[in-house]
Image 1 (cartoon, one colour):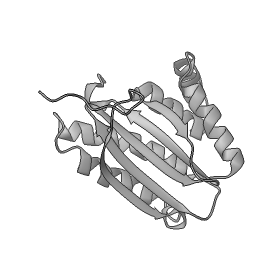
Image 2 (cartoon, rainbow, N blue to C red):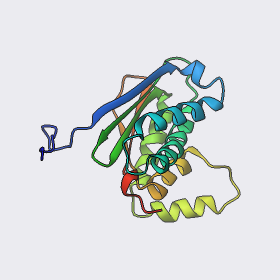
Image 3 (cartoon, rainbow, N blue to C red):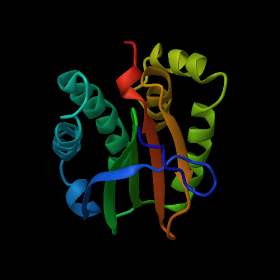
Length: 173
């Protein structure tokens, strides 16, 4: 039995699986790109899971939500980078995309609220209203429905790196 490899700070090492990069202009030119990318990535990474069809469906749905957040960026230039890596039963999505400074502040605030105690209550209140789903609701949904861990990491200026860890293999619903 092999040992688990860890980063120097004690964090587990996520092994890279697949990455897709594209110009943000191309990505935001059609809504269907969210579905195409999420479906393709899900099929590629789900083949060795205990229930590959279930895992593919869950991952595709969650990843589509993450991509829709990037789809709404107001920044017209740059690249979208989608990287998926894995450690044990957890898949990590790293989505790097261009954003305006005020968008970066929004994401940092929304991600911190998704990690808070009131995330479930905030999510239920937001979906019971008549408003269309916002980017914040999408992030709350990932945390509540998919048990995702979200964070914003440092990236180059005018970009943001959204990291979403999904423990889908052990998800009960």
